[in-house]
Image (cartoon, rainbow, N blue to C red; front, top):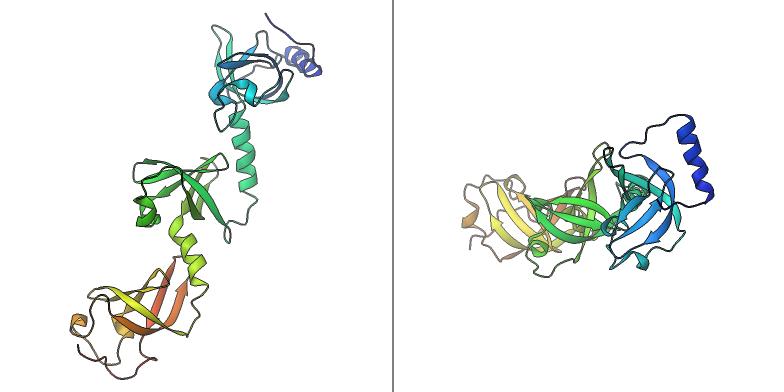
Length: 268
């Protein structure tokens, strides 16, 4: 058995004295006492040394342990796997790093902060993202088509926090809200802008303003009742509209034509 004489192993005496049973997900102080190609050997005060696999050393897997660890490296290690029958213990540094990142994340002003996370891979109806080693999740409906269609991998996308489930360590983010917050700053309430019609629906018209899809509801087009908007407008046409309301939380902009032009729109 390989052992070390570092001061942290006084903790082992305390474990024995109070008959403490080490269990999975405990965090113990330890020291690296050996470096192999695929793993490191760690003394955490138990009867046998623990194994630190290559993939559990850091959030970005190194080519070999020596790239990020030195002999006599002292730190905290999370018990990832404990086999009582063989006394084999697997520990993790990566999980400790993730826990610290999680605590730092909770200190961020989530409501007003926009972050840039790296796209990793698709899963279900969304994408897994990497934010400084912390894994985030975004539904596809919260990611613009431009980013969903990009062929290159691991590109950065701006995101705004949507929901944090502390008890599950799950973070949901929204790229559309982040882009909305950046672009909507230039859209002032009650100001008039020229926009391009994207599509026409029964309930209103979707208009592109500074890259944002804004809604011009049929009730805000004319003081007179309009039955068929396609009689007056067509996709691709540019029209003057006024900013009626901005919903920052939902990432939506509502427009009006009533104050821009009080007469019914010209029939094309």
